[in-house]
Length: 401
Ligand SMILES: *Cc1c(COP(=O)(O)O)cnc(C)c1O
Image 1: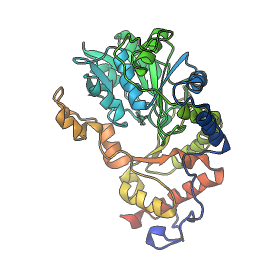
Image 2: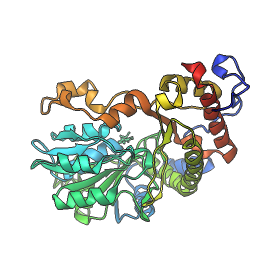
Image 3: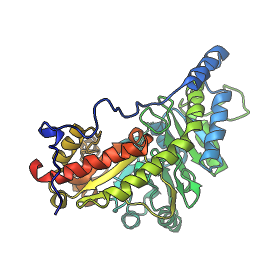
């Protein structure tokens, strides 16, 4: 059916499609503006929670179309603080996906509540039907992840959450710049949590933010982030049991510069992602993460791709190995559904051994693959390298058995 590629795979001693001299972008990206911003903070002697934090919060809220932004020192802290601010704790359940970074779920356990895992649908995001079916009298929140920067089915999830009076919390730690029907992620439900850790599409090394349109909720989150203080009250006046999860001025200064590049970078990743989607979906045995016409912007933290080993003609492990040898940084992603992680053996509030989410298990064990976002910040010809690499592997799939 497919014509044989004359050149042998790099894995078998052939010439790689992409020469090792052509590097992919180093991450994070910075220039003189970051250097200058950092020096200004240094010399100002205001190194924590000052005017730059305030300014970044305003900028980020506006960028994501949210009314309020409460910055904090990590996405993990933001998730925990949002749950705490909702009064979620022992005896409560929070519905989460098992295909995500551990923090989505550990945040629930950290506040004493029970994470309830529900599977994904074909979008790599939480299946709204599964979420609806998992709601009990104890459920206090649904916490989907916009996986890879692809916004999950917010309309359905919001109507389920509203009908059952539970909070909808977006784990938006992959979705800076993403939009659902024209509105940015983060305040599509009660609140959304972002991460600015070094691997993310905009970064201050570490950092996080809680976005919301609810002023009272924002005030409570800010108080918890800042030792239980209250705005406008004396420094040693504490009205809540808080913590110290404040962002520094150095981080905020970096983040403002990073944010100024995000629009352009997001459009570039989206353009490149769309080209990969249209070309790779033509290859039998491959399926890019599906879009939706209600997603008016995709963020592409991860370019997600599924392989059907039978239809493609070789195993995922061999595919990844062969692509890497041709010069494409691709990986198999999460090795395990979160409920299989050792930590859940220790938690006695739920029988996690009994969890079974077939879509997630398939992504982890046989089909899921990731290309990280810096790769999408290159030019169209670089996308053609990726497409040609994958076509070459396809043509040689039989030799990879
Ligand atoms: C990165 C990430 C987090 C946690 O963010 P940190 O800033 O690293 O604490 C939470 N959820 C998801 C989906 C993430 O990718």
